[in-house]
Amino acid sequence: MHRADFDAASYPWVRQALQQANQALRQADFSCLLAGDGEFLPGVAYTRGCPLCDHSAANARRLFRAHGMHIMACAVCGFVYSRDVLISGAEQARYRQSQSRWL
Ligand SMILES: [Zn+2]
Image (cartoon, rainbow, N blue to C red; front, side, top):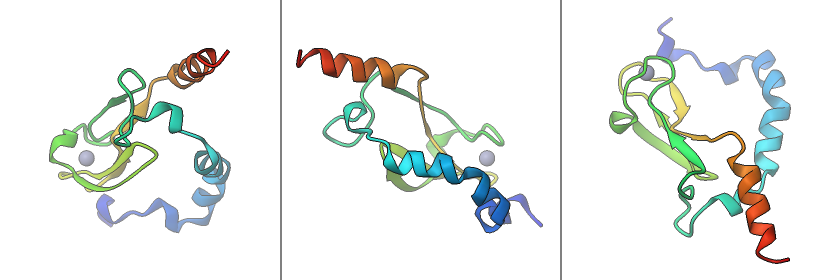
């Protein structure tokens, strides 16, 4: 089997292990982190290349965008990953900042 043919979601134990995280992601409110065009605001996230082979995201194929995250298929190994990674703590800081404007 080639690693590009591997689909982790086809294994029930993987889906079960990620169920809580996926549910939290679906219910999360990312609106305070996104600009009007649906992209992350500056300083909230960083972009990366393929976490499997480290190839640049610039040559990867964009599959879709959800919650500001660009889901990419690596041009070299085919691994599917999120190009955008939230900066730890940025979402809490942004949330506190957005609340303070209304107090
Ligand atoms: Zn890759």
